[in-house]
Image (tube, rainbow, N blue to C red; front, top):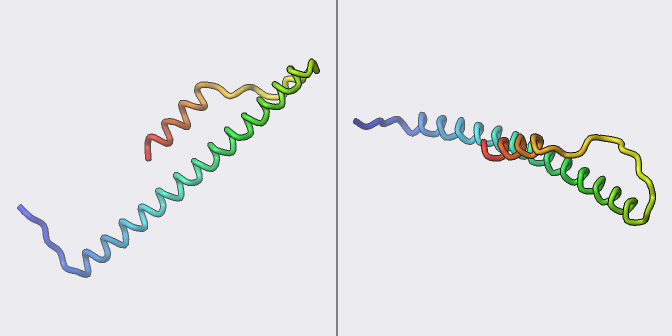
Length: 81
């Protein structure tokens, strides 16, 4: 059994496929940017705390640390693409 279509139908299907790919790529890029920004902020916060600790200065606990659940969620999102 085979399926055939006209050139017009094929062109419409191709344009729909490209549009769907563009939407998925945009969602992936947004998720990547959010994850990258969050990881960068976490690393800067860690560096700041390590510097305070290394220089013997006290530091204030201001926000919860990065959790394994966050990383697993980001990994799952990346794997979905």
